[in-house]
Image (cartoon, rainbow over all chains, first blue to last red; front, top):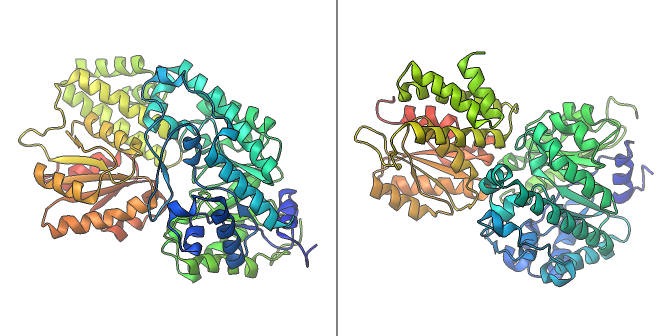
Length: 350
Length: 211
């Protein structure tokens, strides 16, 4: 195992809370595929073969342990009839809200995946990545959680206001979002995704109080993850997790993406044996790191969270910013190979 | 329980009626503006500090600010963002992004603290912010961002304001600044807010003579 592990072996072993040959790396570059192909970000995401080729080249360059079938979050809004704003140097954003009056929510119907050309492109990309992976590399799909996606559907203010002022409309929105989320996750699994990243920043106590989350987003997550026919990882997109780790563990998720704002050793202790920790290199600071700083950050993360497995090195947001230089990504990749080999120095296998 | 504690608890529970009762009580022994200064501003600052420390949620900060803003509107005459003669000229806008929650929270806190603010909206370009600052004679411009790309654009804004010789102090805020404490220096901002409640202290320290 240790000498010949594939990326998939490595990831499955750490998800089983055992030590693989080395710490797996989920680098999660997405936008950078456009740079690899010499395309604008808009052009890059206009076709599935671009994304397949971009992801293939990025993994060939950095040697990370997954393919990322994610295009951008706002693509789900396109399926709901919304628009996307593209930029030359950053991730696409969702356009105007789907509803500006609470009553409009009741008229929304969940999109049918087979009728959405953009979603079919994502499925085609996942299929293409599965083919390139040849059973050796996990392919990650992504869904926005029904609890968090209303930020894009309505705007953050309206969403918070209407949870109090129009609870029936928000309840309806959560229900139709659940149907779409489960269908969309399962379609990606059928297309070849190995696992689904359930992107749920509003589950974080940075955004929602644990008391409110337990009565809302947590229940939604439990229902969704139970019906998603494959393994899931929950990503909090830079938000803190410690106060809700027990709750997250009960949703059935296998891993959580954690914040640079929390101590990784403390998070690992709280997760040990229940949840694999995915994180937590600071993607915003990465923009100005030197290669030596990148190496130091990788070493520190490995020392804090890698012993015993149950750890995948990644950034803290689930997406590497466009502004991060390539040599820093190379430094991260080299550092995990240099310092992430098991058994780790000073640790026997646990 | 002291009035500030009772007010804090009511805000965190989004209990408008309980919060209003505490404020009403405070107004019986002081002028409304004094009661707001003694009760609302310090409690909102405490909420901001607790959010920064990871003890409270953004939704609680937001709702607390909104409730306090409603109270201000009930207690004080409307000011419509326009400064009286002695007031600082303060404006806020979201640079390029359309995520306006951070701006909304800062607006609520500033207004709840009696500081009139002009709301320039969201999705603004550098040139537009420069021109509006010039036209309105703005002294302090608060700029909210969500994405790293727009946070970095504050550097262009600062450069454009300096090139135009406008004496505008730029206050940066938003998630990228929380995650990278050096970012505000990199973009040349005059100050940075890590939570909405920081804005009161910052604005008062930046304007002429403070307050």
